[in-house]
Length: 124
Image (cartoon, rainbow, N blue to C red; front, top):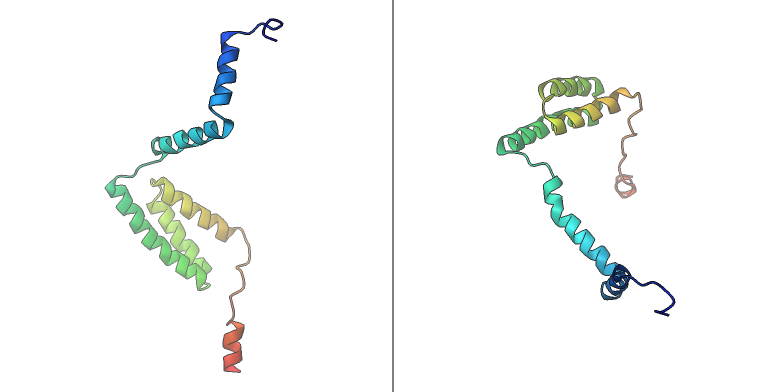
């Protein structure tokens, strides 16, 4: 067989690599390398930015509570106020914009949950 075909060094190297390193090993090592290098891809916030985002979350929660209690108009006004004050913070701006779009899309809010059947049986 070796005499009929023209075998180069790369061919032997590729055959040896396929024998020595099965595909699952190559896949495993590729995933390990990508996972280890993901640190370079993530965004890192400074302590000031972290604290500002925590403060934003506290203020965002107020609007969310207004929305859940059914005061959608007040929640929308609150979100618009947050949108203006956190316009320079990408994560906060994205969250507020998403909530504003959700509220202004005209969708009806989901029905409120009623008491569970077990609680209804105990009452009645």
